[in-house]
Image (tube, rainbow, N blue to C red; front, side, top):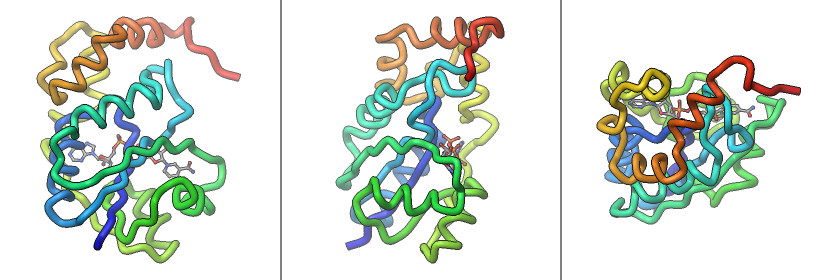
Length: 173
Ligand code: NAD
């Protein structure tokens, strides 16, 4: 039995992530999906909470044919022990899929088998581009699975993103 790990911020979850996960599901028996930067929300680059992103991923993957787990994972300041932090929060996994260079580097250094997941229409399916469209009032719903658009619209996520993207409403310690 092979269980894989795949992590993303999913701000928001889009068809690029979906294509990768669908492909991974053809190669392994189970999949652990990490919701990265779980502590972040209400920021221009990270507008949605971990709970909202869990719902997006869970609802979009309702028909994924393999067992999968969705686990929020907070960032930590120490990259050198981040893999241990991830491992302590997730079911055991044998292989990691990613094309984030830092994620690949850290898991390889920790001795994991890492497989690079190919990018799927990166210019079209990109969290940065989808958030830009939301802020500018352009169409974005066709870039995400329908259940994801339903989750975002259920709490008026676009209005939140527009509010937090105005510079004087950002808060940092
Ligand atoms: P992301 O949501 O931007 O991307 C997730 C994955 O999907 C990435 O591998 C990305 O390359 C891929 N992807 C994006 N668009 C795609 C497309 N069109 N087709 C196919 N694949 C596509 O998330 P991310 O920022 O890469 O997530 C990594 C997470 O790991 C972050 O939350 C980061 O903070 C966390 N992290 C934390 C630490 C630490 O806390 N010290 C260290 C390393 C990583």
